[in-house]
Length: 202
Image 1 (cartoon, one colour):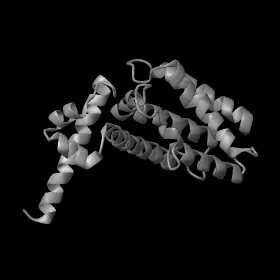
Image 2: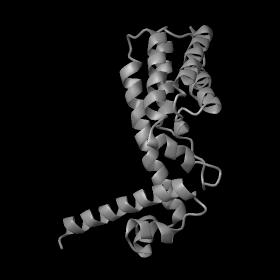
Image 3: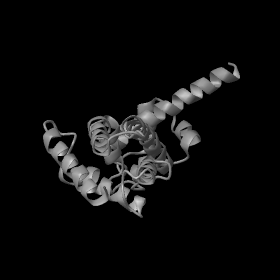
Image 4: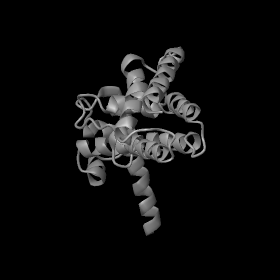
């Protein structure tokens, strides 16, 4: 077997391990998921799992990274499409939060993310706070609005955090956007949050 074929098989095994681990971590939780169970579900040996990832905590980190990347891409697309330089600020902010709430938050990736970052997990990582994650991208966009005079504040980072708290955090703390029929209540929180933010910063 040539080198390319071996690499292809190795990558397929790696992806199978990640998929199996994700399903088991979500289904059974971190503590109850074993490397043996991951290997059995992936159809590989336990040694193969260790060769690719080292230990269970590193497998969990890799799964969480995979989910985070997908969510980040979804939020980044909403930022680029909705928060353009020549937009009406209220309409754009509302379109942005609605798009994230309807596309990213009800997705299987977000549902899995919430389950993967429960208190039983080795690290409770917040995808909104990673250095290159959605939160930092949103802060940069708020800085651009401030520089253009569309928003008024000497502390754009704090303003961005206020916006996130008034919209996404409040909606997620009080409602479950993945539940059927929850959209009207979620949307009401988002609209109120955008308007409260603009009363403070416009």
